[in-house]
Image (cartoon, rainbow, N blue to C red; front, side):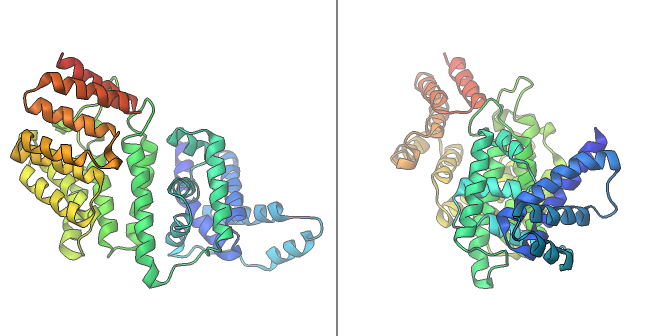
Length: 401
């Protein structure tokens, strides 16, 4: 089992480098991506038996290049293509290849769901079956998304190349958002019986680390990595042995990952000091305030309220509004927060979101109205698609009966 795990880790790390090298050399992303996937499959079959090659990446690149020719081969063009491959030097891995590949997978011409699927496949090295299991969608659906994404890249003429410096910032915004989507889906699954999908959170953190390695001076990438680490550090305490959700205030903080918290705090402290302020940095700073409180009553809610105010001014969103309201309840009391929630609930984006009812229930409970809180917990339970969240909300309602 240890050998197989080591090979899987090696292949997952090498996959984006191999694909980037092959795409940079030959250009046809869709065919090259299929060829690399087949090279990875061949490695999983051969290496446990024959041993890992001295240069695994070169082995994969060579096999992928040969497989690409087989995929493109026709009787009329076979000889010329094979002659071309024989004359071509083996592509080499370059330092910026993975960043260019990530930018290509997150091309603005693709839909967000396609960006997520293609990134997990091409950059993350996950198979179609693994992505389907992680996202809880049928494998054919994932395959269709990836195929359509590759077709769209071809149709819009997107190239495997670093964008101009003037365009890089805008493209990086999309890349960071895709990585955050992957992380969030893993940390709080939007549907299904599991709250966590660790394979997604781990992959998002790994890819964000790689992005930061390529762009060490980018404050928002640093902020995103810090946010992921500080948030994921609480995962061991978020559920009970039976899978039931444990709210932040009730978590056993001794179970939190102290090393991840220390790393996250160090990263965000440096980013806030040395780079231009951005939304991910503010979210990471909020997470750091939570994580540094050894007991719930020691949480600096005034600082959190201030940070949410800054975040609302810089990057307003419905979820930021809800979180800001919760922070205000801890500082100014539930009555003020309930009035703010009544105004915020008029936003169509929040009209039927289960978190509105859940927050209202929490505020009503704080205000001493258990009957009204119970009804709101029940409403939120009916609206969520996540089984752990539903069970938690139902338990809160039952406790107030």
